[in-house]
Every structure is written in structure tokens, then in C-alpha cells.
Image (cartoon, rainbow, N blue to C red):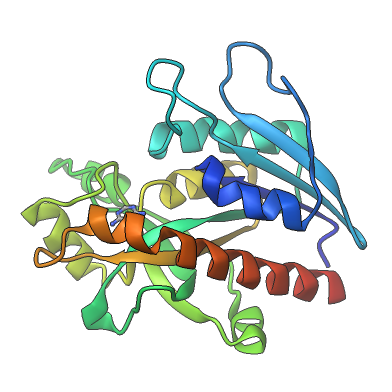
Length: 238
Ligand code: ADE
């Protein structure tokens, strides 16, 4: 079905297992000197695979996470690689009360939302929520025994009371910092998108999510790579 896919991954540590597994080569300086984003590419069976990370912040030497780098990365990735499918892969916080467990790998279904773009002006409130429709991946989800869920994106690792109320009203299962931004650019270019996230921490006031994130990152990352290997084999077999 798809012959050209592009992984969009925010953090280098999330991307490394994929770069190794799919034996992707480093396209040094691919986006020019101004852009921190990094590109890798290669072939895997019948598939042409590219992978774009957000790169590092030059002042703090940490990954450029969040919705702004995600939009720029997605734009660069689509314009340079022209993929038939974008796969946004990474980690997310999960809502335990909706049955999500640490280490679960979730494929986002329904719509991709934002929970922190609150603009209480007619029409802008709907715009703020994003709500970009996602392709139906139910056959893949069933075949690979993965979980489907609703994703909401915001630029804070934690959340305010208002964020929480919006995520509850959206029935969000997982929360990340990039997906809806990626979905916006994919929507503009009419490029199919698959969002796949592994859960590192619970979205709750009782647990300090940042400690859980660090503790569970390795496990979640391993599960993400395993799931993506199955996803790519599935795509290759279609
Ligand atoms: N990525 C991993 N955990 C997260 C959380 N709790 N919020 C946003 N992004 C995350």
C-alpha cells in the first residue's frame, strides 16, 4: 500500500532504536545550517524510510520538544521526502482511569486535539482545539493487537485545572506535546498520518509524572520500537 514512509520523532533517544533497527543513514546537514532538525533515511524491504528528529536547542543542548518544532519538522519532512504516510512516534502520558497502563503502546484514533489553546471567542475556541481527523487504522490495530486511544497535545509536560477539564471533555486517553501539530501540517498537505505513542507516566496529581517519565523511559522506548517494527512489517505486507 504505502511505499514511502517518514517517521517524525521529537527526541533523539526515542529515534536511536529506530535508526538502528531500520539501519537508517545520517543525512548530515540535510535541512541547512539554520535548522536544528536532523534527517535519516534508508530502505527496509520494499519501503523507502526517512526519519526526522527535531534536533537540539543550541543554547541548552537538549531536544527541541513541543508543538513549534513539531510543525517545522513536519513541514520540512513532507516537503523534502514527500512521504505517502507520516508516522509520529514517541512517548506520552496516559490516563490510568481510562485503562491506560505504563508501557502500553497506543495508536491515536478519532481526532488529534489541543488542550491548551484556549481562546473563548466564537469559532476561535473550536480552532484552538484543533480536532484534526485521523485516518482509520482499525485493521492494523486489530491485526497487531495494539490499543487505540484519543490523543491530546499541549506545550506543558504537566497540566492546569483547565487543561485537565478539557482533556476530560475530550475523553483523552493519552497526552503528548507534538501530535496535533504534526496532524495540522499533515492536514494541510493531505498526507495520511499514524500517531503511535508509548506511555511513560500517568497524568495525575498523585504521581510526579517527570519522575515516572525518567524511570519508565527505557521500557516505553523498547515497547515503541517493538511495536513499530510490527507496524512497518504490516505496512510492507499490504
Ligand atoms: N510525554 C511523556 N509523558 C508526557 C506527559 N505527561 N505530558 C506530555 N508529554 C509527555
